[in-house]
Length: 550
Image 1 (spheres, one colour):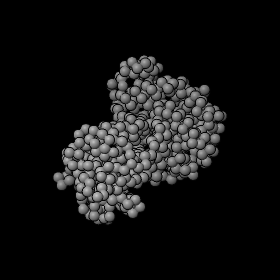
Image 2 (cartoon, rainbow, N blue to C red):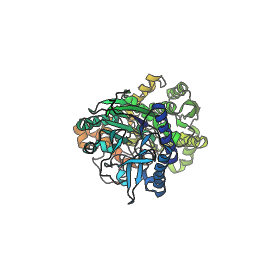
Image 3 (tube, rainbow, N blue to C red):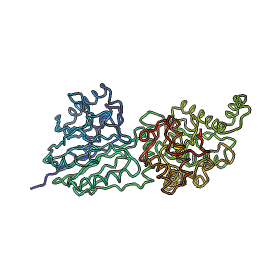
């Protein structure tokens, strides 16, 4: 007597938020491929795949929800030779909206599950839109009893156990789990613990692709009833994988190894740029290339995401730009095969300072004159972006954005900020990683002191603590929400802590006006960390020399 067997496809596919018609076509095409090419009998898609995730306040629109629910009927009518598990926003008869997963087969609904654990922390706002379900869901298919869960459900104790008690012998979980550094290891550790306790195998299907600030890394996997990973798909790549279940046990398959921290961050940034440009219809990307480490990294990321023919660089030297900066910028552009222009900013700076000479008479030079230079560059880059239909990439990193070491309407001008959530020390690690693939960033760019080059002999450490110290303080304050006293107790100097914290707090107004950027840490500015601009709370007294960097 043969044991019951079931072939299940894992659809790790890149969908577009809001484009329901295109998403439905992709679902149908993926189902056809899974059946005809892989021999699958059932295919599992990620969470809310009909609308894309996160659809945010589109979920408040009645016409959008109606279209999404009609799409389910269309899929049921047009796919008959394979069962599908599809995530969608279910509008119930009582008018409530649920984050649901529906099982369709031969035009019939076999089951519909409503997500029970609605996350409302970090980047998640699901309680804003959805009502929580309160019941497990198990359906029978080809002799197997299969339970359904959705994303956060498997992170909470009790929900997997309830599914097993309801008769589930195998669990499917639909996910839209966004990437941050170390997240895949965290996911697999949680599943290991939950599954091993419940002793039930689990198939975890995760979304792939960039959506504004968020990156979904895929890395879908299958765990046996001991929590051991027996199949894993690639990170950051679309894949329709296949797992065979025999007697309710997954047959071990290919387990793609995970990237290390630096490689994972690099591939996430590449995917984020690629999808933001592609999904928003830009013809390519443009950026200012200074000869410094940040713009060198962004150039490499952009080329790896879009191809050298879609990327353009602009060198904008001033009287303070060192010769080696221009030389290194040219070497970077040539190494990556990128077209570049050299547009000196001195004529524009002279024009603006001349126009302002009368009103500035009797005042000393300060950061105002430095910022005029940065803003002249912003005007040049935005003009070229407008004329060519290319997305302007800004090059500021998380350390700079944290303390306001950037110029509003200058180097902050642009449409997308790829390294906005990348601390400075990680910038160096990413640059070295990219050079290991092929040398594109000159070694002296990696070793010379970083400088904005807006004043004679200027280096960043004139205004900031050393980045090694600054990044460590910022990680504790921004990502871990530690107080000044906790950070000082960890061994950091009170002066450095006070200076860093006050700069972070006082520059919230500036970050609010920055372009969206790719989230790779556990707490990014914007979706994760939302602080008031006008605020009387101060966790630490500001040092006398702590001024806002405009």
